[in-house]
Length: 332
Length: 268
Image (cartoon, rainbow over all chains, first blue to last red):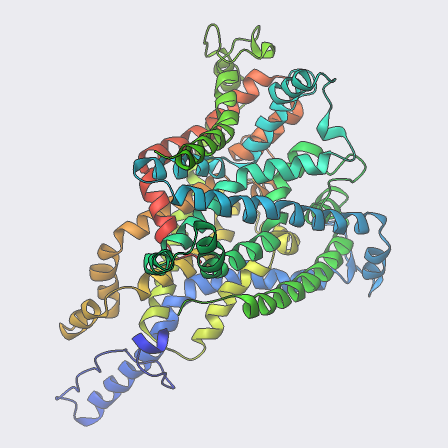
């Protein structure tokens, strides 16, 4: 794309179009110096624009990435007054033998897989359904479905905790009345708590994905659909063989987003609703990292776990994008 | 209207109810007097603001709302500015390392907050920023999301306008503020709204860098309130409502812009 709009890449920065008009009065050394300082300015100008944002991410994202690597070689409790003890690779050894680690990894997998229906399958269906609605109602449905996304995760967690209250929760007691059973304390159940968190996060997430798919659908040219229906294709056939393949970049994007962000999405829920319990059954790897660092002040182990996790995760995401690239169909 | 259409509407109405019911329940509970909170009636029999008064008197919620507002506003302005400048550079020039720098921005998505939290916390503590607004704002003055989105807007910007400005002898700086920004007002506003909402709702980082209730943001305050006063559901719902009302108000007024911005952002 860039190459179409912009002139061919040149070795040094130059204004795109049109070239600067030559300065007719440039004669003598003073003018030449002025010209060369102007050249120099043209050369650094793009960087001056990028620097504020770049500096910010270098200081607050990339520097700490290496900082974490460094901390992983020490034993330290986060107090400025206590010295850091170098321990080599001990922290890594401890991470690998940490009993909570396996469970947290497994839980993280459950969160990702559990959220996929809420971020991909359901929203896809809903977006198609909304797309079929004509007139004002289409916008109204979209606006309503998007609302949960606007609410802060902590608020969502507090409200659901109230609705699922074992004695007074409107959903919990209501469902128990309907089924004729005794209300269950979903958030204290070792089997159900994690799925409760998946459900609550999914409720919040749904509208976001619906909107992303709606955006993708508006980009699908109606010509294709018209042509297909002239050829006598049924509604389902059009969806299956034309709309879905054209949406595949969006689907890829949303799946990737889910894999990358489900840890962030579930963190406040875990923190407010269960604190990782009961018995670690809802702690994700992100929660464990936070707990190790800021609850048990085990900076070294937390950092070592971060490094391992980041490496594994990065490899996974990279492999995933490669894989999905191969299966995506682009309308070019 | 065919059967299929009615079916579609029915499904969407049910879905809309599922999306709105918890919000309704939060507001309804917050308006119930203490004697009614546990009775699960759909409507408060006698609406009262008792819970709100309780919250106002017992936690520094005014302070927390103000802090949250300042944090969200400053971060939004900062992120808009830094991303505007960076995106302008990416759209205007090809320069050595431009792709690499852009990749650095995109790459931040791969790095979860939990991986960078310890060194960032240590730095903020060394600077003596714990419990200050600076700790909340400064680490997030640039957002990769904003840079990427803004770059897309800029690329779609008509080049003729830029060229005309250049022919008139305008510097790039003046072109940006005199021509690009006024013409990108709508997407800039939409991005601003999205950024404001997401920073208003931020939770993880404020949780780390604030210790005291008075200097904390509303999301953290809400959680502390929940831990301390576990069973005061009326006041809790009132606090939760207060934490959400500014966003709801913004959404009701600017709903079309938010949705349009999303749909047209070309996020795909």
